[in-house]
Amino acid sequence: MEDEKEKVFTIIQNYLKMPPVVIWGSGATVPFGLPSMWKLNEIIKTDIREFDQDCDNLEIELGKEKYIEIMPQIRNIIWDAISEVDQEVLQKVLISNNVEFHGIKKLVEKISDAHPKVTNIITTNYDRIIENVLSFYGIPFTDGFLGKDLSMFDENLFSDKNIVNIVKVHGSLNWFDLDGDIRYLQNNIKNSVPQIICPGKNKYQETYKSPYRELIQKSDLYINSANSFLVVGFGFNDEHLTPRIKTKIRKGVPIVVITKIISETCLQEIEGAEKYLLIEEHDKDSTRVTVKERNLEKQIIILEGNYWSLNNFIEII
Image (cartoon, rainbow, N blue to C red; front, side, top):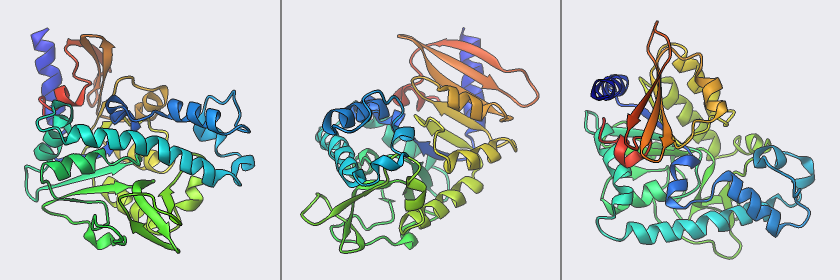
């Protein structure tokens, strides 16, 4: 067992020896209490009478034309649901030495350890957990805004040294439309419109607008130049990010995926990769590892310990 553990750890360290681009999905924040897509689906069913009560796929359902007129209402419901929990998580962050968030802090510190001390994170999430954790620990970061009320998006704030770049391709809880300008605000105020791109096919039309156009371009740049990928809780359902990641890993760029449950979509998209390692929960006290090394058969290894948890995984690298 110790030999297998050492083998897995060595492969992970080898795959991620070049600082990875981090792909951060909703599965990364569900452990902190943020609502999953399933939970958001149930909330919308409760709050909107005309919403299909048999819906089991929010992404597909919200792509239907019948919801176009009430999309602003749906957007506000999603914003409210996530924002409420986001504020609760912020209170936990403010409790000194709260070990729940050490994984995020250590992840950024380890990736940023090498010159030029930069971490690139691409996320489809709206919440501000990463930003709040980094702020609490005094770690410099940017999401393209100055982080002050009424500041405007400036893609030049992203840097290639001494920074954590957070590319939020679907928007953020703190971004609002004020009279046609996208502004940073701490709270939703009167006459402001939350700038989050809801699930569904219509989201691709919205990404042609600023700042999403620039953020998509930035995510493309980071993915295309990546030497490795660390994927945390991302289900590979995004039709923009997934094909670009897929192209890179098929050319030999290594990818490590950690999540509670590896989705069928993830397995399908990963299958053509030359080098990958997938980490998921096996049972309460063990981890299932699926590993593929170049020119070798795929192998499944069961390890004692919960290495699919970010706090525990980070000790490996």
